Amino acid sequence: MAKVFLKDVQKVYDNGFAAVKGASLDIADKEFMVIVGPSGCGKTTTLRMIAGLEEISGGTITIGSRVVNDVPPKDRDIAMVFQNYALYPHMTVFQNLAFSLKLRKYPKAEIKKRVSEVAEMLDISSQLDKKPKALSGGQRQRVALGRAIVRNPAAFLFDEPLSNLDAKLRVTTRAELKALHRRLNTTSIYVTHDQAEAMTLGDRICVMYNGEIQQVAAPMEVYDKPVNRFVAGFLGTPPMNFLKGKISSSDGKNVFILTDGDIVELKNDNGQLKSYMEKEMVLGVRPEHFTVEPFAGQSNNGIKSQVNVVEPLGDRKDVYMSSRSGQKFIANLDPHTAIDVDHQVTMYIDINKAHIFEPGETGKNITISKN
Image (cartoon, rainbow, N blue to C red):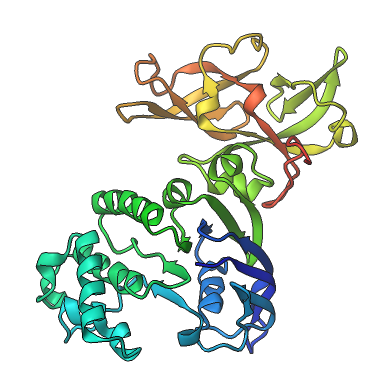
């Protein structure tokens, strides 16, 4: 077990493309860190640099007390689980699990003991004599996990390991992975584009975009206090709504005036909005923070809207709406709410949970604490 530390790590390819731009990340011993972001953001490249499968262009990577920049992958004391399982098709499950131990010349008795323990832990003891082609996708994933666990490494690296599983199996395997981490108590770094995996698995999550780390924090802190518009829009299903307008003052109170003319009264800001007065900004509201009834003390914070689509989902209704100027947004409403397509309604915002962002895809969130 070991901490992993990245300091100003870069990856620039020969053609000049910068895949990772000065990433710094401190992963604690025994922590489950999830690196999440859209395709092409640099998350897998970062993981491969930690593993030693990709040469770094700058910075340092430390595993435990060793700087491993020039250490070969086999000597970094890490184990990696790949998206495509990477099992040897001509070997049995037992042989796949035992392979790395044989390379390290472990005694036969020790190999058998370790493989048996891991197979029992992952509930694949009955599959040891089978070859990968005879296994289901979920069983192959367990073998891939077992092959990493049997080595007892200082850190586990996971490269989108659940992406080839069907939706139902992905959910159950996700829960098993979380329980397995608690049992093994080993430092784990997990890469995914799936925000649900990030939110449910990570002790902390690292959000990447365009080769840069945007935010590192506990899952609910990232969800409730996104540092910028990209993070806010990436986490959440459906994503956060973004409504254009400007900050102004009315009757001595700070307000957000939407391009439609609707006015939303802002909460007490302790002065941080002063420098943004009369500037074009973006109001961010999560779908669950809309309702057709005013929130307590917020009867002025309504947007006149038209209902375009209603999606009943059992536990809620996702209602797709447009404001008078055509700004689109989505509200999560109680499933029994009487609302239908083409209805003209006023949608109320819980302003205590809304955010204001600077314009641009990574515009700063000006409403969260700087602490």
